Length: 419
Image (cartoon, rainbow, N blue to C red; front, side, top):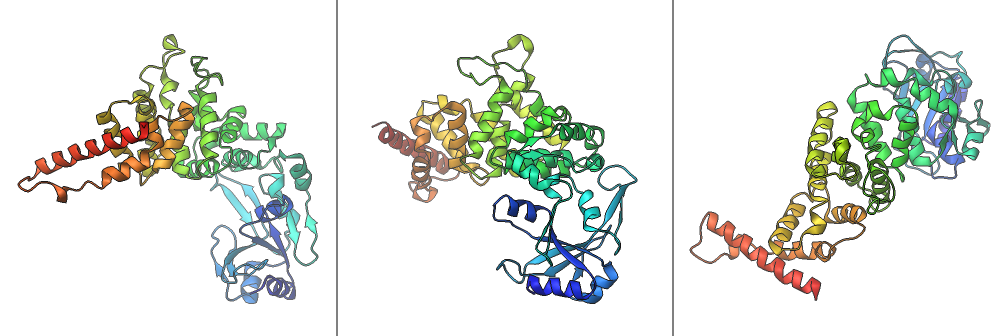
């Protein structure tokens, strides 16, 4: 149905319809809004179901319905969420500790008050076309500030990660009261399921500047507890001649932002975040050097995975980058180059050749010639097939022949690269 029909049917049933949350925020920011969510006041679940029998109830703790609503020239079959306005009170721990009240007496201001940030606590009255902004979200958008709506911010501790993620996405600065509110989430946040934390990390890595996510968590005193592997890099000095940007944390933040500026692949961005994890466990007496950090980094990554199960693609990509980011720029002998290029081909499902080059190039401030032409060399080597082996060869001898031919092809291609 068209949005106008939805609004009219709500009004006919005695209710009032609003667009809420992120759609309103992005509309006011001049961005193309994505999913449009709705809140209805003046109705309860029973009256809404009577007015919209085609709606599908999906909410458990509070009434939320799915309805096909066509808005702004979009697809008519897109399922939109329509929630009854609600209040919440905290009676337990974590995000499951809420009790929701949803009835026809609850106002849109009541509903917006339970939300996290002022920029997400606005509504568009679809009957009158007016903005409902009781908590100053529009002013905070203009000032590029992230501010909690109320003292209830910390009742869902993952809001601290959500706020840091918005800092990464929007580049807005935290208000002092946000830092305080985030810090108060610490004890419950440490008890949250790993998948909720991982979900926010994925969204933060999708931002233009992922470093802002980690920096804000550090400013709020949360980085050490939530991402101790990243926090451990702070204060780990490096040779200034190679790293004028500062310690290992500053270096990793610089690289993850540079990689994010060149690839949208979240797996590649995670791998770049992890490339120097081993520096976090370098003994103080060894600083500013980090001998063997590419080996230690694999151990740190394994510990991270034990603490919070990481996606398998992330693990495979990060292991490759951790173990090879120092070695790759230094290779000069064809057998070693051939070996590495075949390894790159093996991990390409998780990390494309282009993404590997982006990460290593960012970390090394450039690429050796063989990596500049890695795709061409790998394609040429891939054309060698066991079916072309001389007659009479069997078993392992065919494999040895293929390896030998791949190496010869690699040598020829390297010669062309240098010519």
